[in-house]
Image 1 (tube, each protein chain N blue to C red):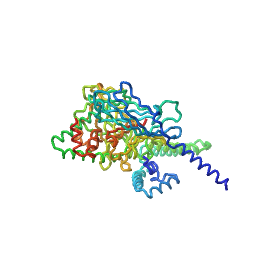
Image 2 (image 1 turned 180 degrees about the vertical axis):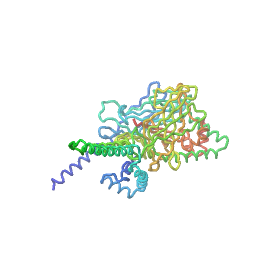
Image 3 (image 1 turned 30 degrees about the horizontal axis):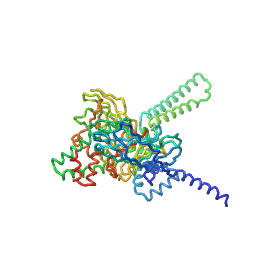
Image 4 (image 1 turned 90 degrees about the vertical axis):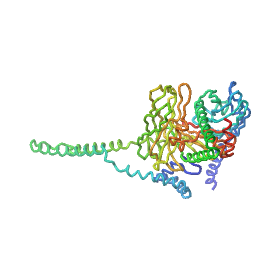
Length: 194
Length: 380
């Protein structure tokens, strides 16, 4: 959520991981140096990122085990093949086949492909929201629907945020309910994601 | 020298020109149309606007500030009104709604309302009003309804009215049984709960995970359910996908344990963090507009949305989820809402946002004191 005068949450999260571009990082650092609220939010994101190193370690999962076993089996098969070939050479005295290392290279490539496939299957890439996905959120002035740089808002002017009750519908709506200070009527506004 | 400074000056001039173009232009009152049908229970007494528009790319951003005074032209008391404000039907961000529940407007009495919002519409448009304000629905004291009901206003206003009756009865009982000081204490508790409830901020989006939580492993978590003895609907099982401070794609299976067909169910959704603090996350309504859940049958409530939770600017990692039946609409249009005892027995009152009526009554207490509140309760 972007608060007035503050970098938005995505920028702070990226900054927490050192993933911002240098201009954005410089601007964010400058802001954060004088803003306790954003500093706290960055600290919170950094706390969440502590769980990330565990992800980087390859877990002992079936795909990896299978890949190792297959690699071992292929090596065993190649070694056994060499033994048989040596015995055949002694018996038949056939010439050494061309591209003797080709099969080994092919087997290594297959193992590598299996490892990569295993990694991809174990850690699928989640679908990530793009910046243009419509989001309904609370701002200091009211409820806002935003998609990229386009948005609209239902404002509650003259009402303190603490006197506003927000309700969220999982179907993609957000409502604000407050007592309008000018006419003392309970006013419920609603914004729709789509 | 000039050759170097000229491009810079030209750029500054172009930026300045762009700023001038993007400035707010007043919207004439004649460009706003208030649509009230001939048989409408409300007549327009006065209308004033201080609205403006500004070009934003290919769109026109409308900054609307309108004051309307409507008059009840019927012999019945009006308990709720919903207005639909439309700049452009097909444009995202082109329409919104404003609802006024907890009203008590007698025959011939005036109802002053305000509309403050921003809407979008394409810059290119062919004539017609810039903005239209339509009456979507009016609810009367006998729960009769008037209006096209394009926004399900009948259900919303009826549920609000039932909650209003429930909460007024509760406060009148407190006053009758325990006196004025007990009523004042209830109001102070309510205001304190309202202030605490505002600490959680939820952002809603359609599907997908946000950049900030995408690196965190996602897992499926089961709902725990609060059961209300008098609820016509029983939650059976449910789950949502959790990752850090995000929950997405909730689904809950519910069973109709009553003897009447049901056409709408809304579940309340509470989340708790690692410190076991509970927050009202939102509601999970049935998505199927044509739902008809016969007695004894089950159905699933599904929504493909993502909810992102923060409190005081910090992400709130979701640990547990609790669901409860919040609203039911029967096939005959009648509405069920939980009673006050169920809510307080389940300790939900601490987490749930107040009803519109409780909000109104606590506001009267806050601004005008307990005597004004007692006088207000005595009107009903």
